[in-house]
Image 1 (cartoon, rainbow, N blue to C red):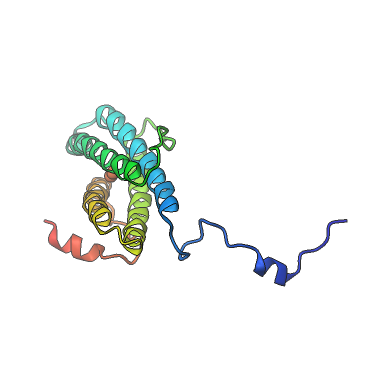
Image 2: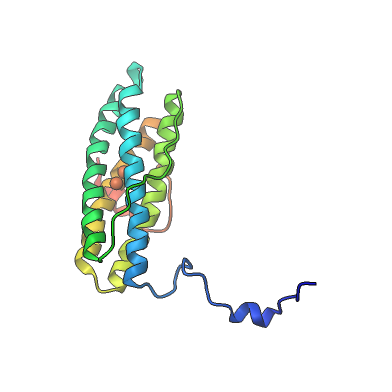
Length: 179
Ligand SMILES: [Fe+2]
Ligand SMILES: [Fe+2]
């Protein structure tokens, strides 16, 4: 019979490495940047495909915007690869899975979900870079974040919905400045 774990034993167990709020290390940061890179690859593929298959007069503007997004996501992937290499790690080569649909609204919704996730992660990443004293890296990710928030706005506008509030970050400032 398995010995039941006491609450004290559970409390003494080491905290999972992924727990947020714990001290960040350079190795952990490189791992997290590799997750970000896999999300950038995912975004490149999604935008390459969706920008070409979105049909219908009402989607012409957003299809053009998605083509611009595709190129920006490639720039982001290059910046992240450089940072991962700088941290002494090998950049990953595998994208996160890309969802597909024949319905334009589904495609835009998938993109928006991914951008929300990306924004949430980059906000964390900026804090983690600064915690490690990597201020230049934090600045590079800030520049990426500005573009991701623009992508989020483009997609929400095309869907005719409010821009999702993914956390209590400084989104309001950015929105106020735009348009
Ligand atoms: Fe990106
Ligand atoms: Fe994006």
